[in-house]
Length: 340
Image (cartoon, rainbow, N blue to C red):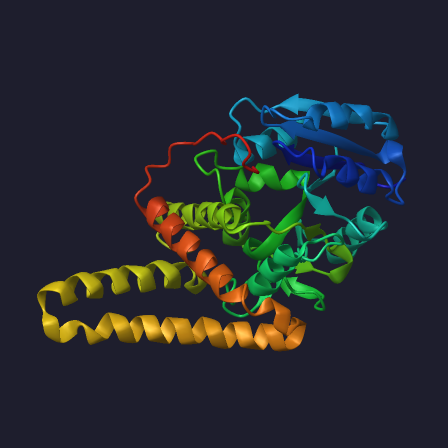
């Protein structure tokens, strides 16, 4: 008999995508009686719950649970505590699952490797992306758009990886070794959880078979908010462990802080005015070169959008990291219209 699987889906205001996501889960080549779907709702104010309930008949085991704290970390904890499955897979409400054998492939890889956690590629190029979304996807996947040591956008590698990079599938028994998600984190809670798994000397495995596509943000403001949340989590990681702040997270705040300091100093010491200009020029040149590489590969039409997207990514990460470093760890509730 195939292992029982729990699918944990944290949601908040996902009416645009939730029906498609659930439809793709229901289309899995896996016996419906051998998996359950747990919708963990952060008090949605749109039609998410009504849509989820309307398609619940597609499943043999389906439940909607309330997440009163409205935190992504608490949503995961609710799901993990309620889970009946031997394996747990976390899927967001706004994803595209192309592989109809995802569950079977996950179970097979768990069996073949004997590991407690699996990682998955999470490219930002699902069908239906708009022009701006494609530009965001190409920027995020490029060498200055995300951490150099991250495997989250790796599409053609199968093999061992650090679990903190992109772990998303677990043996439920792992919580007895590392505990649940830290609810002082409302961003990067999965990174913190996977980091603890790595501290327990456990390895992960990534495979293109496990790919789940994510929808990128569709405007600069929502992209900034997303990146500052990522940065916030990275800053809290440093507070908690005095490590875990990797180069991709520390470089943006260091750059912007130094640029600001040099600019202020140049107002009082005239001879220093050249320094912020040089720093700004180097940065502008860097993102223009990166934009050129991406546009050459993906299409010149994307070139005008890429520099402001890169700037938004870096500024959002910088702002978030600085907030996180000065955060005392108190949970924050999600605001209306914000993805958990």
